[in-house]
Image (cartoon, rainbow, N blue to C red; front, side):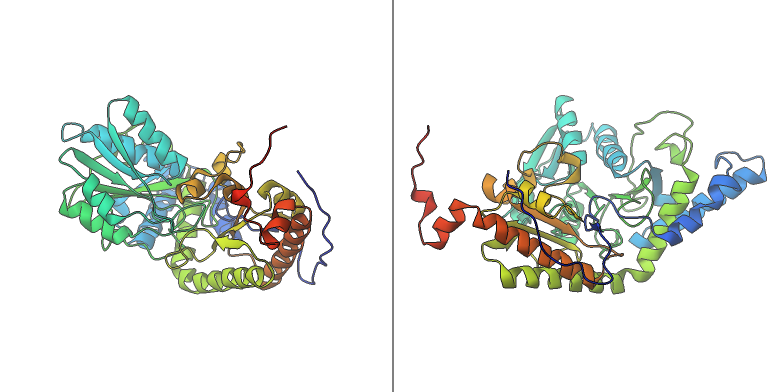
Length: 417
């Protein structure tokens, strides 16, 4: 693995290290922290304590948060169930629906590029005798609606397709999927972790029956999330996965994390009020970063369609450069190669492989996740630094030299020693 020293100057107004990995997690917004603080010390009651003011205050905080979450996605407060995060929400929705509707059928449809929280849950259900169809995606990262239509049969009870991908930022045709599911009498769940608060989400207009979201991707605290469960047309029933005191309408037992829930509510309220403006600003910074990189580097390309895309996401392959060497060269910038939840392994990202990228190209990919607290000066520094390091690494790459000389490296027969 090659390491290179960079000589890029740090401009005024830029403090290192720079955080540009907002799809992995986002920093807590100070306004969210402010809303949470009283619930740690003064209003510390258990939301299930109905006999005194401490419990009532806690319950009031929780119910206000339920309203705030519901408003962001066009739901009603009674349709919001609080969980420990999106992984739990996905498990609860998929296993809970599979169990509840077992008599109706045992077939579930998902896609190859889902988050592991969905894929591993589906694999677990396969062991329990369910049939799961994993739809492929096209080179642009989108599913083919015709594939989905063909996959639905009379035993299909659930379709679970993520709203926006955590690695490549591609937004699926959710409203179209929801419409098809409702026409066929099939329930539709979406892991909307990366989409909620970034792009408009309306559970009714989009015919979504269950939706997972989490606080820490929208400048809220870690360890708290929610599951939306439709109450009318159709009324969705979910069998609980954690048994206990019957909290959360009998769907999720356990003492509520009141400060976390209050933080999630506040984060959702801020997202609802500021989303349109923030999305424009993030898309502007992302396009600025992309244009700068493309103006100075060849053999780079964006992964996933830019037409249906999260505003703050840019996933690029820098061909003839090893991703890990690039990460080491830009170690004052937090970005990721592959998804944070799977980065313990050095396997190429399964999401990029699903787009049809070869191992070498997948290994050369970097995900930039722009967020609320990034600015143009940081974008310019990141672009300059990446350009500098990529150019230096390519100077050390015999493959890049051969390609520049017009040699077709796919035709070379390498000799093993």
